[in-house]
Amino acid sequence: MLLRTFGWSFGVTAAGLALAGYLWGAEGLALVAILSVLEISLSFDNAVINAGILRKMNAFWQKIFLTIGILIAVFGMRLVFPIIIVSITAKLGPIEAIDLAINNKEQYEHLVTSAHPAIAAFGGMFLLMIFLDFIFEEREHKWLAWLEKPLSKLGKLDTLSVVVALVALLITATTLATAVPHGGGDKSSTVLLSGIGGLITYLVVGGISSYFEDKLEDEAEEADEELEEMSSGGKPAGSGASAVGLAGKAAFFLFLYLEVIDASFSFDGVIGAFAISNDIFIIALGLGIGAMYIRSLTVFLVRKGTLDDYVYLEHGAHYAIGALAVILLVTIRFEINEVITGLIGVVLIGASYWSSVVRNRRLGESSEQRDDKAEVTSGV
Image (tube, rainbow, N blue to C red; front, side):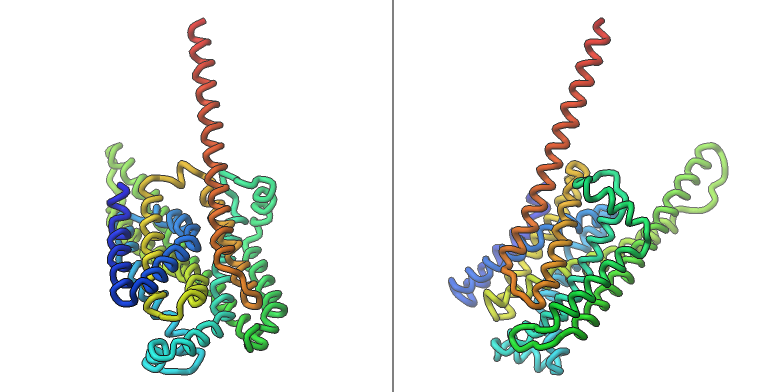
């Protein structure tokens, strides 16, 4: 199970480190290894969130997530995306931006860093919406009941998460974005527009995914009714083909949603990577190896049913997302070390995991006590 799920990750790691050592020597090998660890530590909560979505998809789309999805994650977000950002912000052609990334690494790094307020606002708002929609939703299991119970009641107001996100964006644009360091000046309008773009992206992609997911559930219910009619001798009202086709559509949009989530998580890693190296190929290789492990971990969590066994893990991951969203917005003006960002996520997920273990032990002990009581009663 472990080798089957992580086999590609192990292979990519070995090949990537060997390539780094061949092209850049011991220093390049060390940088790639450090960047891989950075990506894993920053994106562990991403794996938990992805697992919660991926378990709704069939084996085919799980394979797509690990194949096409990893190509998008490595080459799209870790290599092509920074070049596109430089091309747009510096008003350069794609070829010029690539030439700049290869031959003038310091200037390329400066341009990517200058685009950080827009990137942080977009990613921060997208991730903030994920957190808010989770925390405002009524759930069977509550980790921090003293906080989640009142917030779930407030969440009955359908537009509350959007309102809270817009207020957070407005505060960010009028305070943190008014004096961006390193010669950035006033980036209020940039942050405001980028943040609204992130919010719109979440509403569109998330809304379409939810729509097809709901329709898929309706089709599944109809299919169950048809099966009941067939078993009772009635004629089926239709075939199950539509449900299969609709599952494909739902999975496709969930796949797009997963890719946007991954993009939002990768923003801080890509920007933070320039503190370690300004070589785009070293960054893409190091972060790509880390992204491969995150995807393998996602599939592992799904196949092991970890989220069902440890019910508070999703809570911890979403709290980590909320923390990351706030950190992204704060970094528009203030610098926060990537180690702090990674540790916050690890601590929150670790705490939620331990709470799940304690809960399982308590339920196990209660079950054993009931069984003992039943045995005593039957013996009497």
